[in-house]
Length: 225
Image 1 (cartoon, rainbow, N blue to C red):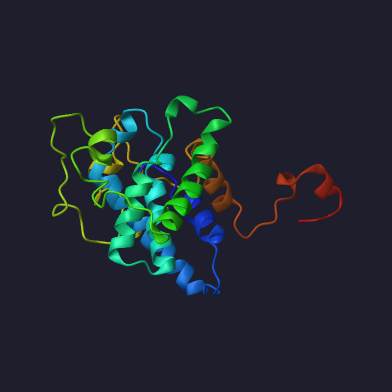
Image 2: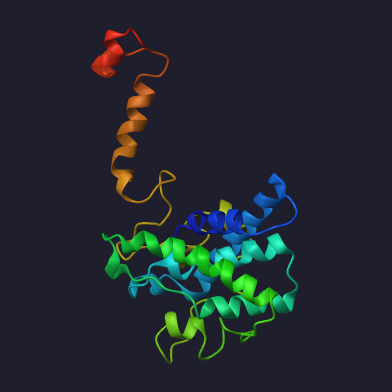
């Protein structure tokens, strides 16, 4: 999905109050499930959601975190659907705030809101169980234009693991308007990607060699190669 799910899932999991310790394997399972949930919701709403000006880290990754927390707390089906219904009324994030201090707040708000949605659902607060797919739900309001059918149906979404798939498996979600894929050459936001090929070539060229001339002057003076 056009978002950074890890930045929302992991803080929500770490901040989740718990009375029993969470094993590393259980944390990993919850994280992977969260990524899967977020990617499938991203497929359902399509990349048009991003093109309309929404910031997916705030509006899509919140559901990834809800899915991860649902696994963490072993929620039943009814409570899980309620949590998603609550979260559907808590999504936020506009690209207009890119470049300001508000953009990173989208990430924190998404993690906080996901945790609040799950805690409220566990406490008995009610919400529409079809808050995502209903005619007046999340997909209709934040996704396709009114009157247009979504290009993806639940039966058409690939059943493979999204976390290990690429642009060939999820073309509608991963394709930019320019034709370039969302799949990135490095686990980082877009801006550092320009220097990544050069850094890779430099690493390959100097592999196995100590290049003192590439070190800062203070390190060269100290003989640290």
